[in-house]
Image (cartoon, rainbow, N blue to C red; front, side, top):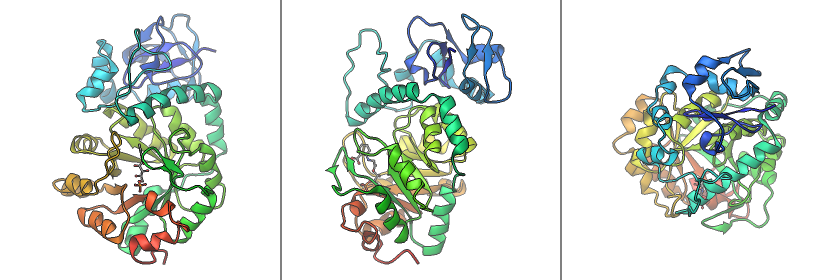
Amino acid sequence: MESLLVYPSAKVSISNPSFTSGRTILSGNRHFGPRDLSNSIRMSSGFFPLRCTNSPDNKEISSVAAAIYEYHTDELINAEEVREWESGKSINDIYAKQGITIRRSCRPAPPAGGGMIPRNILEQIIWDKEVEVTQFKQRIPLKEVDRMIEDASPTRDFLAALKDSYLRTGLPALIAEVKKASPSRGILRENFDPVEIAHTYEKNGAACLSILTDEKYFQGSFENLDKVRKAGIKCPLLCKEFIIDLWQIYYARAKGADAVLLIAGVLPDIDIKYMLKTCRELGLTALIEVHNERELDRVLKIKGVQLIGINNRNLENFVVDISNTQKLLENRIEVIQGKDITVVGESGLFAPDDVKFVHDSGVKAVLVGESLIKQEDPGLAIRGLFGKDISK
Ligand SMILES: O=C(O)c1ccccc1NCC(=O)[C@H](O)[C@H](O)COP(=O)(O)O
């Protein structure tokens, strides 16, 4: 059965049996915009096979398309990005207008002429992710992921766990990161047992855990996420991944995630909106990460955002500066509090003074990897980071 390739903000195409963000639409296929869809799709019930009456060969399309179609609220259909895409503007031009400097390579079907060279490590990671996700989707189509989700246990409330911990300790709630390696620091821990680390983090007061799933750059895996989830850990789990496609969100849910990371420096507003909606439907919390004022202001305009992470690390050049959290919150804390948004301070936190500094700036949670994972007992290291035992 052929499937409908759908990109939320844009064109759809009948081509191969998976759905993808439309940037990988293959040449030679006929493209449809959301308005075509609204006239042509007969929905059965929500998530199930449909018939696309204006497809070239009137084939059944995937259930995913139904889910995506449902998302075409008026707001999204009329979004400026959709109009721009339909009028032929390139996805990277649309991104650039929102201040997104990370381009898409549209691999594994490169644009005619090719020749794009990544401008920085984050761009390289995203381009590799485009290929990886395409391969993953061929191996495990969404229908299969859907079946896996049916067997998965219910999600736990990531945001509530952060809020409870903050109320209990009066200190920023800890999201402790299970991270073996990183592009900026190389191997952080040789003797890496994700389940053992997760247990010691939980025992020593972490409210939630962040599990790296990227293999190439962080030596993480979805298997680690699955293992930690099945090891009796009660803390809610963040799937720390470079998400560029809805499939990854479904897969994260199937593998035991309670929350996913959405990076505003990589995703345009319309993707963030779709992905937030998908997260809500799957019972997942979305942690939306920003690094600069422009990204934060974009995200603050999106309805339904509850959790924002301010990354002190510039992912394009690895420079870490914890005053970034203060700089971004300085003039926005009232707006943020008014919307009841919880802010997480991310990266570069090593000592109680660092935690106090970001707390004073307005964060109610922190995401910490390196300074814990490098210690012999990463759980005990939590006491050093907070200057006290936060488990009681
Ligand atoms: O950590 C990196 O080198 C890195 C490089 C490129 C993209 C993302 C990267 N890290 C993700 C994170 O921001 C951190 O894992 C997280 O905030 C924890 O930071 P830290 O406590 O400094 O390990």
